[in-house]
Image 1 (cartoon, helix red, strand yellow):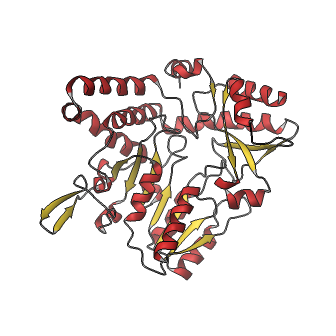
Image 2 (spheres, rainbow, N blue to C red):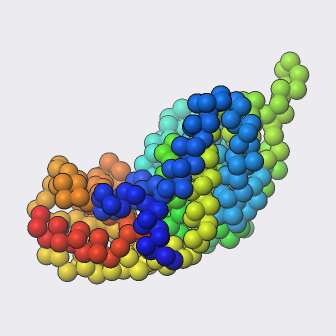
Image 3 (tube, helix red, strand yellow):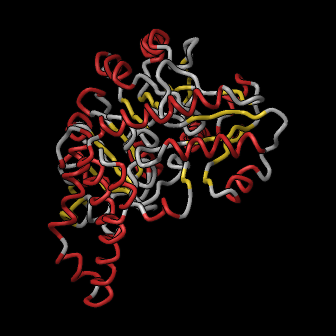
Length: 390
């Protein structure tokens, strides 16, 4: 990994120490240029005509996403966000009153809200799976609850937005596949920083975004749909003519591939940018990215532990590139701005985003720092310096 080249590819590195990659990463120049070129073509020659001209390049989105997830392009759909992808997958499940959905205590807050809405509207029942002492989902409790409740769906967030916890996604998939239970994995925070192998994980759906660790544009996401889910005829609640053919006055036929989950209208500039971002990550190699991030975060956690008044909050056997910590005597109000004024981007997360997790930890908010492979150790040292001055 040529760090100097990667930083030259990232103009933002000369403006700011960007440690909010779990929010939205700095976009590299190849992604920026691809999107700019597409927009110029669309401006000069028309939207439909430019989409036709760029059709081969647009197709590479599916190829590159498939490479990242170790699957086929026919299992990939383009979406507008991770939440959009997650909700599209949910909408394909024919819920009935009394159906049970199992979820973890660390699922993404938007996922909780969506499932609570299903509970309110359709009588779906939600059941939480316990955590182990180290914070991950308790696999024994998961198996027992599947056998007890016969859920129609298991929903798990791979990496929560509020901490560096990494759930054992593949071990969960071993259980759900063996017990023939639908499995929806929210990989919003793991795609681009950790290997996410669809064949190993055995999820029926994997949702993700481009703006975070994949370093793509905002307003772009992806959905993996397994062959099992496709062959079972699962389709979104409200498809349009991208996802289905109108075959007679009162009939339609869904597409055979995962694009049945897409809508006809999309921002093709973002598709091009997403394809470029995926290729950029694939060319570096996701394992190389994960290895680099492990070094950065190991260094950062060690340095933070030595700062008086700082309490590290991440749980799990192998925490990832989201580092959360509380600072004694400090309030959330003004925290982000203090660091921005010092040229450092980071994020804060409060209890509203992690009600169960933060209640257990006894905190109302944390600082969230999320380094990525293009960051330097010197940038982390500067963060520690500014933190000590706070």
